[in-house]
Image 1: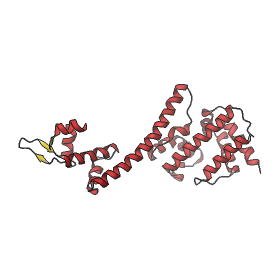
Image 2: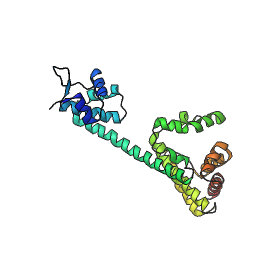
Image 3: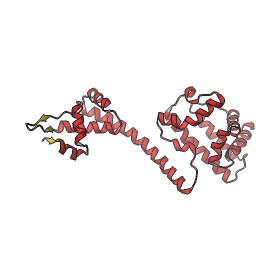
Image 4: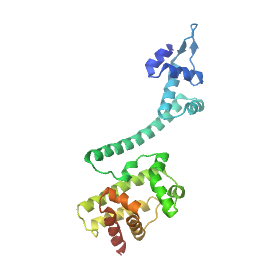
Length: 248
């Protein structure tokens, strides 16, 4: 069975102009040119077009798609690879969708969403943009380039952002429920947070963490970040961390 360009376009949702371009650059060649000059395509070409469209869905450039198809002569192997890539994107989109839904919910309630929660599921370049303001501030005031010195480990940052969201929400709830800053339940939250950080490549004890919270309180930029989540949060967190650090 053979199909014309128009039939292929109607079948796949691709435009005739796009198919002509794919032919021109040698990405998708017709199996035959009729005596009247019509481009004709068979099942083999349909299968190749399917692979092309999968790669386009993954934002591959046409040049990279052509190279990928040349390097993957086996259709089954190519499909398996595309399945892995699409599954990874699906997981990331699920995370972004959840973050977007939470943003919409907060906006509808007139609440300010935790800044850490806004960036779950981001890619490398998106993390660079998300951290740009804070990094510029640190470079200007303290001569510290967070992105250059630490680098951007996407999976690690996404994990830490998710845990930080849980931790700060929990501390905000403790403040709203008027737990004393010396409450054992609050200390349990702090200890769980430190366990997470130390389990993810960051060596920090109670005293060092108390020093961090003191810095967040005294530094205007970071104090404002915490206060935007919950009024009094920077003071509450600092006092809780310092009393926690004073324990034996």
